[in-house]
Length: 68
Image (cartoon, rainbow, N blue to C red; front, side, top):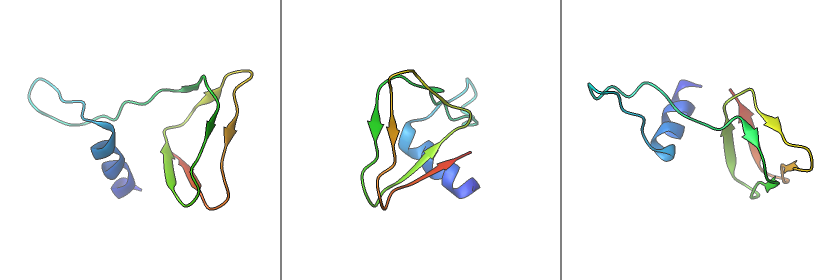
């Protein structure tokens, strides 16, 4: 799991402290617009998340969503 989070951090940009430490990953906790995954791709989400009324999260065949 740690290797997945480190990889995610490198993709999402860096949060760097005043001494250059890189300790955190920042992610939204609300799905406000409908989102559909792309087949044969993997997605990481930081739990908990909520999905707004009227929004839909669709996981397509062949896609994987992991919640941490």
